[in-house]
Length: 93
Figure 1 (cartoon, rainbow, N blue to C red):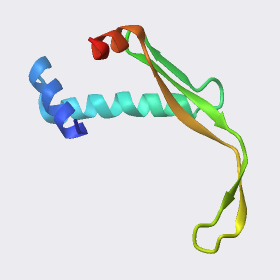
Figure 2 (cartoon, helix red, strand yellow; figure 1 turned 90 degrees about the vertical axis):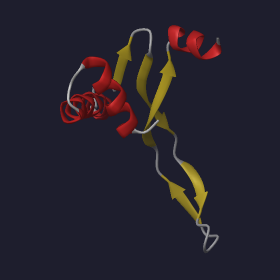
Figure 3 (tube, rainbow, N blue to C red; figure 1 turned 135 degrees about the horizontal axis):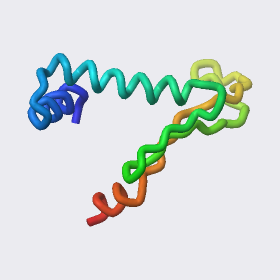
Figure 4 (cartoon, rainbow, N blue to C red; figure 1 turned 180 degrees about the vertical axis):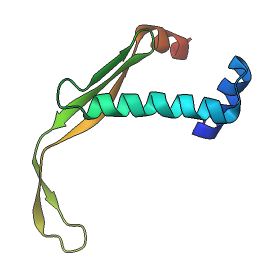
């Protein structure tokens, strides 16, 4: 499902225009992204659906695929999604 498919589906269910629905979905996604990017907690919980968090990836030794030269890859924060119990049960059934 693409974002356009999601906009169309939600617009039909809530009787909004596609443009208004797209604004709502964009606002929700931006809010989640901003919360994850914040240095404070970086966590968004949607009960029954799941939680978005950030995890710290350790620094590691990498390799340049073209030259084969070893390079140091710095540590970084990455987004992580953990599905909630209800979502896992829905998918599993």
